[in-house]
Length: 148
Image (cartoon, rainbow, N blue to C red; front, side, top):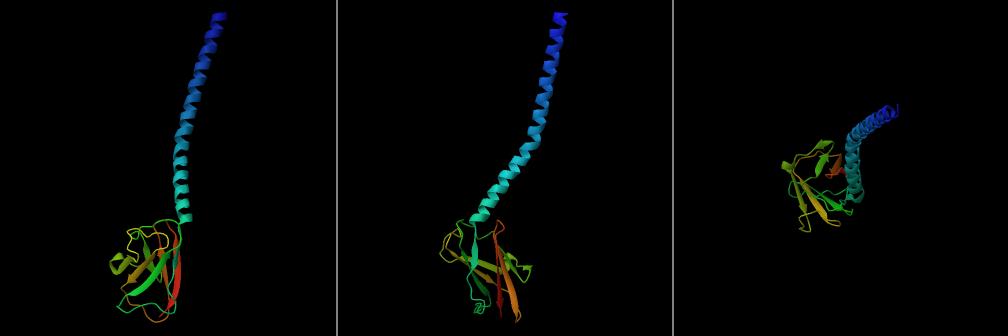
């Protein structure tokens, strides 16, 4: 009876270890994607917190000498930004890149902290109040109301 009991206990122990390993593997497989998503989300949030932009135009005087409305936006944050991944919206309409010219006035290839980005939009706007919005690649935006 002694050897039979020991063998039974040994089988139950091995089965319980195998079941515990299966449960641990299942938990790991389910928790790993959550951990990855949390890491990605925290990186994005960190970039957004370091990013800030400000439209520095006079809302009463929007330059239009060459047939383009010109807006000046300053990078007032700590994050360097690519100027190609910037969306321009006027009066709720996304303006296609084909009629938008973006130039960093300092000549840097990246829109660095303190640099001013000149945005020229080749479109006609009627008289009255308008809204200009700029959105960076990581979702930070600035809105600017102006009159023509």
